[in-house]
Amino acid sequence: MERLQKVIANSGVASRRKAEELILAKRVKVNGVIVTELGTKVSDNDVIKVDDEEISREEKVYYLLNKPRGVITSTKDEHGRNTVVSLIDESKRIYPVGRLDYDTTGALILTNDGDFANMMMHPSNNIDKVYVAKIEGILLPSEIMSLKNGVVVDGVKTSKAHVKVKKIDKNTNTSIIEITIHEGRNHQVKKMFEAVSKKVIKLKREKIAFLDLKGLNSGEYRKLSHKEISKLYVLAKEK
Ligand code: URA
Image 1 (spheres, rainbow, N blue to C red):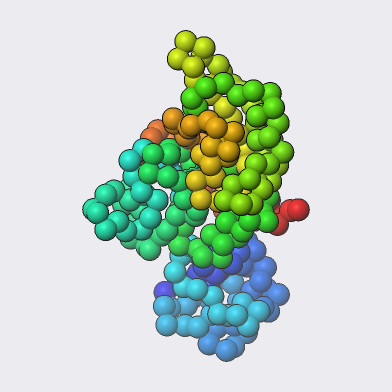
Image 2 (cartoon, helix red, strand yellow):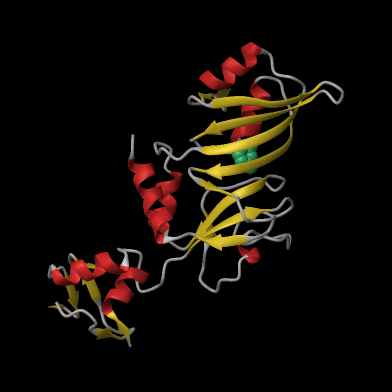
């Protein structure tokens, strides 16, 4: 038996405090009956509804992983390769939000919350992703402008991007470029550079919105807080 407000909070509908408010506001039903007493105990078999919608009883979990190279962004791999899911010690069925290529490293969110995943992946959202790419060659000013204003990838123009040249190495004829996009099309960054005839040698996603990789070595992960998840919801809905 668990406290009703805890069960509601675990379902991802609201924080613990907000769940208490929902109960006091008579918006919560247990087995069809409005419950207003905080601390009411419920079991796994009780049907709990908030605003007449049944809540999911599986606790929602959210992780930020610093994905290593050589791991696939999938829940399973037919060829027995390591997957991002296998790196996380979690018995619930989690899956990655969007994807990073086999050889791309960096920030990746994993969750069992389908609504959250859909919201994060929706193309119209406002979630910036910051990538750092090592490329062959040196970008011309006109190529930087093209990347910023949009290049044609798979027949469709990419939306506006921020592009910063971080380093140029004339000896090895390579550059380090930071590029910020909010779309998440397949191999988008590599294809954007391809559109200006540049090859990506290394790619890392350094940030998803305000989430960076501070404190996470390659292969390490942490849980996202309630506050971080709500902030992502707010950002995703901003236009
Ligand atoms: N763009 C790419 O090309 N690859 C990734 O892994 C992510 C973005």
